[in-house]
Image 1 (cartoon, rainbow, N blue to C red):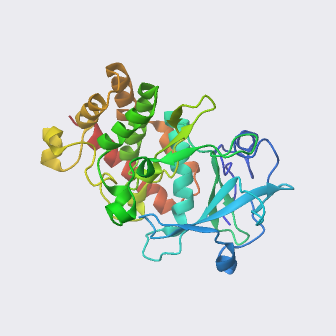
Image 2: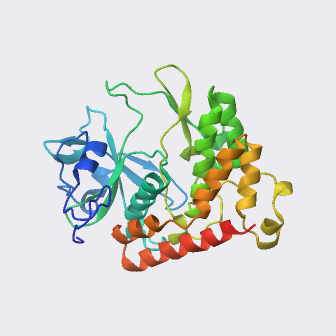
Length: 331
């Protein structure tokens, strides 16, 4: 196991386990060990509760978990899990696959800490053999334990493998997804600004797997719908060769692309400005969001350095950020 010198939740320096801030956010303030009492590889067949296919891994395993007596344990059969553990995938074709949990954790922390994007609460945990796993607190349960109504954008659009083929969650464009949000959310303008921010973030941080099932709407106690916290954020370019966007039709119709996009094959900030206008984000909001992402953020580098990525992957993550930033800053 790597030495724990930074909180495996917030990445704050000077902690050999979860910091108080992480415990409050992820574990309801309870003291919890960051070390799991079991190994994933040894008990793989027994541990997998559900398998969820995603493009980056072919299959990415998800284990249901709860916290009991200061330990993260697998959810007993008769109970509902409040956490999801995601080990490193088994797929050997993935580059640096053992870094996938740390990649997702870092990317989620950057979204939250640098760009104030509301994310699912998350941390890293470590199997007894030292292998890291990503752990996230479920946000589809209310404080009283009742399930909160929630639907992802593929379900809202009525897209399934049966009627749209095996790539159903990658069909359409982000402009199409924005129309779904507008149709289903009363206070759509507030949520559209969050959606726009997330689309720009995914581009800057090379998340090529931001498909329709990675955006969801959730019911509030007032009966209306809002975007859920962001989840499944990761720099996928480190592990696979993918494109700028997960959705097959990209941001918006090609006829609306900038000259820079047409010439280079990659969008610039002008394309995101146009996208923001087309989906109804207020001009001042577009301006401030674009300015935030077009500015090199030093805290990104601090979090990368404190992360649990291998040194080579840290360098790759930095290079990826710098390259996307340069593309984005063009006009």
